[in-house]
Length: 242
Image (cartoon, rainbow, N blue to C red):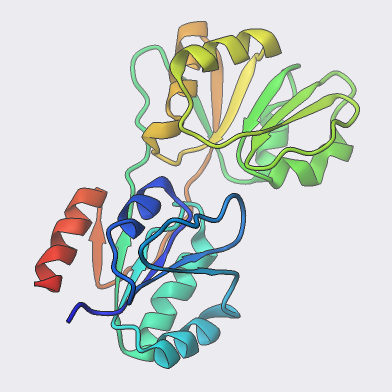
């Protein structure tokens, strides 16, 4: 009998793996974006109430293996997962997706937090934010000389001097080129997610000679097993399922 797995997801790789799990396993989402309704496994939406709540859920549901395949910047969720696994006595495996690496022609600049980002943006006029929803909390702070574009999972009404684009990757290279041209982008802001589905924006920035401001990756907790690639995680999982 296959072990009962709790998969903490929200990424493209997690969704692909969820499609291969059986009905005894659970795919967990925070609730942002579209909730899949065509998976062979169970789907759970919403939080757990911190590490203790997650540990209680693991015990109540008889979970035998916890998989952390959340976003590389979901540091709090990953911390809760590691702690909950320890509290409940189950193994925790995690996908630790490698970050992008700068190449020839790239002008990448790392910042530590929002205040550092704001300072680094001072001399630009048309920033393109691909950080998720965080910039939406600062739309009232847009400097008079700037016009922002924010791309995140859900759109919202336009505000003065800002355009909000609701979209989910993968993004095609030609579409990204057209978008940069329409926006008149002079700087790209991104997390270093390492995702292939959102990487084309970096190529466009390289082609146009635009700087890229990257939010530094958070430190993530050690777990029982870490995998750099989803295929390696699945192969290890298949060996365990035999």
